[in-house]
Image (tube, rainbow, N blue to C red):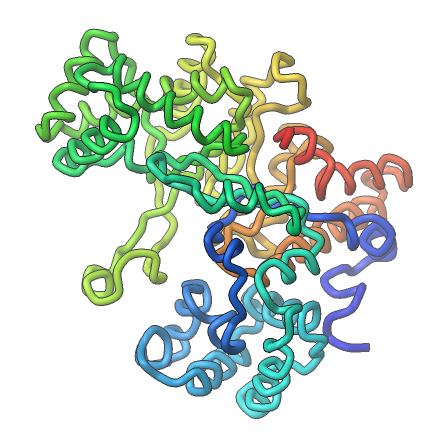
Length: 468
């Protein structure tokens, strides 16, 4: 039996049964990723396994740097063979890191390769993969179809034309839904000069003269409607911290006018205007029955020298901490609820220290007005937490403080067309956890309930929650 098999990551018989009979072949709803709709529309073949596997993957880049690999072989001008060899040398050092598991899940699932990659067999593995990669089965669309993907949601800026999403929707030869996600990072730009430039572009695109917060809200709403017409049903926000400062409408308008004119605001003033913007956006989302995702807790681009050399999103990010999180998070959601502006919401916490803070907060704002169970969600283990330990911690915190049965499950958060085994990895971990509870006598071995729980978490809840 090879390293990757139906018992991989599962240490009990109930878990194996749940995985084999229920979870394994469920279709995938990947409601948060960073794939490019243009790449899917153009459906270009990959040159080799190095391009498919290593280009843009800062998870792997971080590991390679830790393995003493020179940047020349990571993001530099080294050949495809040299880069793949460097990655193979890193893989054999990666026991205990999820990259080791993801690597072999991907080799097994897509390339039918059950060799454990290392520094001795890298050429054999590379040649095997490169022979296959020339086939049509390895173009982006076919990789998604082979992965049983039903829906993906990309990540898109407010002023994006969404041209390729619309072209894909007109393409009758491709049945997978490729939907945009409204990601308004530009709306929260701290640099006042850049914010003023964004407002000018927003004015031009919406044909609305923006000289007040009310006009700003109207222009943003127009862009949200454009996304909605293109099938968008989700927004996503990526603040470093969750900070809430209540502010009167008159002051909100004054702060907005100053910032839109290019005037720098103080730290407190930034928190005030951003709180008002967040509530404004949430109201627009709720009016359209969208889900609002909030990914918080990442401190990014920490190596200044490498940022200057390579740019952003190159693997120099880490987990942040925050004082007063519980108070600010509860106050923000409460302010939205008071304004009748609290949509379905998924909170993703990057710092696992705050898992129970998030899990207990969501319980404060559950309601029945959205027509779904648990409209306020504790999102899956994210980024540095999409490990076995991170996922189990999140699942246990959610089960401790809420109802695991209604969890909307896993996502890839990835830029790769072969990252869907992360869903499989999550499913194995979920089934193992449930099976361990049964075998320890902590829950009954009720096949119907366990089956429903696995189906719900792995597929059905997301389908019902997002209503794509």
